[in-house]
Image (cartoon, rainbow, N blue to C red):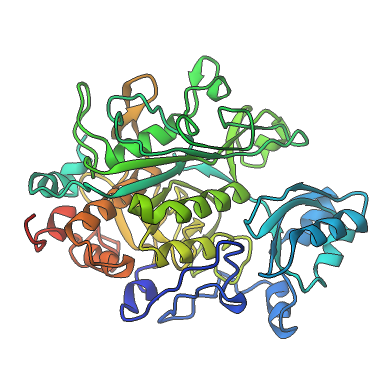
Length: 476
């Protein structure tokens, strides 16, 4: 959202819920949050394909760099977003007909997009297809790797009765250890959206071995595919969930931010056993990555259950590409989740995203999307963490240095990163839902910003203070 974005400023405006199939954006009938500034810029201007699309009055947008990647790699795993009202079957048939080098990999039911390996011939045809809204690479994202709750005053809010009771925090990550004492009894449901793609060595992390699973155990990190060298490499999600909503148990350093809230974990990562695949994200084999297509499906799932579960926020402690110094909404690949974010905001669910660990004056995608709540990291002395991205697109700072929380096998560990900062804010939205149940996402964010603490060198971006934010709440 950015400190100056209109989700924080245009408080008299309303957002409509997007249609479940497509989340296609304002031109196609999906919601558009009215902004107080131009939110369509990226750091070096809209890509040429986007400018051309605007002139042609509805031709598909093509992600920045996709054509160059297709030329270099011959085939690129891509997302093809459809406009509402067009059956997927016809597009699937045409993609596979136009070139033997292209093949459709996934056609998620009612998701409004398909995933395909696209070659030059298929891309040329898709550029002209008026049924298609956008084509862009199915980008890979990676995780952004005891004093924090005291620093942000959530212990004060908890003592006053504001624990997030009745609200739910959704955590899109590497799954959770659902039996961990810090989380036990709080997980209201689970889901998994993961990818199997032998061409790149991708293996689904859904416990059932398929690419989709919902219900108890669906986001479990206690599976063999999470193990590498005798270590469970899926601990990131358990750590993040504990920060947002852990409840004190023996051995725990303290409560999480919203110890009364429920937790909705969603596995969105896949395991890569290919050295070439892991090299794309600068990691050693095996590595764990999240496809944009799986993130879209997960966010659509959260939107479907948001009202019944009273979801206050969804945490995303991962990302890639950038840095972006201005909102990336005009870039279809970087802003691939904007439709889903807008739909969640319309349901009063805050999309909370880690800003990234590059120590840059900009944020990564998807934190660059104008409807995201972008979070940077501070240390316990309220200084900007050396690793944290920063700049005007940030909405809030929160502690992210040496944060102790739950890790698999019923233990606790310390991690640092904007990954740890984001769940402080996601948990804060749950606390605020209980304390101020009538506030929408924009007003809640504004109150968190107005009651935050100044950060040296942080400009107008403040550090979260849940204690101060809840002082005016009526006792219950």
